[in-house]
Image (cartoon, rainbow, N blue to C red; front, side, top):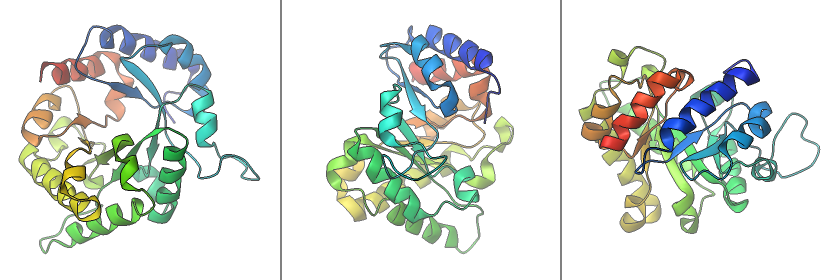
Length: 244
C-alpha cells in the first residue's frame, strides 16, 4: 500500500519515465495501488518503455465479489501486467490454487503475468526445494503451454525480503535457483518451452547490488520493493540493468 498519496505516486512515475525513455534494452513495469491507475496512466501514455501492472487480480471478470478487481477492469484502465501470488498476499491466506485461477483469468484477458514464488526458510536437508517445486506446479496448474509467452516467474525468497542490500541472496545461489526453477518448468512444459520463460529475482534489491545480481545471478530482471519508491535509487537500478 505504497506510496500513500496520489501526488507522490505521480512524482515517482514521472521520474521513472524520464529515465526509462533514455534506455533501450529494458522494460519497466510499475505496479501501484489500483486507486492510482487512471492518474498514472495519463503520465505513461503510449510509452513502450514503461508499462502499468496491477498488484493483484481476481479470477472472475464480474459478479458478486465485493472488493475485488477483475482482469478486464485492469485492462480497461491501461494495465498490461498483473503481479500474482506475492508473498504478502500469500501471507494473508492466498493459496496456490487461488493463484492458479487468477493466472488463467489474467492470461485469458490478454494480460501478462508475474507469478511470485519463494520459500519462507531454508534448511540443510533441502526440504525448501520440494516446497518450491510444489508451489510452482500448483500455482501454474491451470496455465497451458500456449500462454508461456505471457508468463514471468518472480523468485522472491521470503527470508531475504526487506533487508539491506547486504541481506540479499548471494548471486551464485540465485543462479542455482534459476536453474532449479527452469528444471521444474521443463518438467511441466518441456525443455524448449521452459527456457523461454523469464525469471526475475526479488529480495533486498538495491542500486548497490542490482548489477551483480543480474550478471552473476543470471536472472532476466528484478522485482524491486521499497527501492522502487525512491526514484534516484530506482533509476540507478534501471541503468545497471541497461548496461548489462
